[in-house]
Length: 213
Image 1 (cartoon, rainbow, N blue to C red):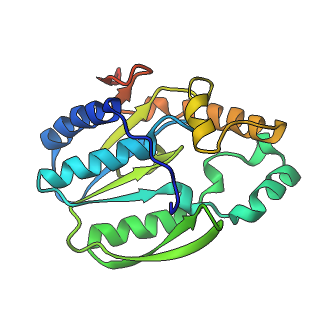
Image 2 (image 1 turned 180 degrees about the vertical axis):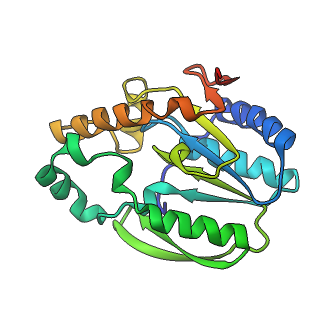
């Protein structure tokens, strides 16, 4: 997402280094890694650092930010959610999964692809053209990323939005009103339900551990 604010710290670097070892252990062509977690949990930061670490190890990696794939335009989303009921519509069904899977297939086939990219400053949805031919790995990050089918490694960040308020303030995501608070609570329920799909967990202390079978 254009204009996103990344707050990269040593904890993101250390977690990425641990995940890197697992990726190298199970490495295969056109590998797909998914990173899920709640708002402010560090998904974008962790994805960014991991992608750079992978490149340093000879694995050219692209990040697919699933938040770019909402079916409802950013400028229309609040009204749409309020009209249809936040507790009813907020969740993974808000994403255009057909477009996500189309881009994933284009990655697997090494094609040139057009991907949506939200400009957070203008709230316009731009189109990004990328050549997947030289790309070795794809990181899918977002609230519900590990719901994506066909991934090779799923990472779940255990921090909840209750514990990440400082990051939300800095990034403009603090629940300043009832609407935002209700959205975050519904997202919390939907994201936590995906935890059993994880292969690796990032604890609230940002340590990477295997998920229990």
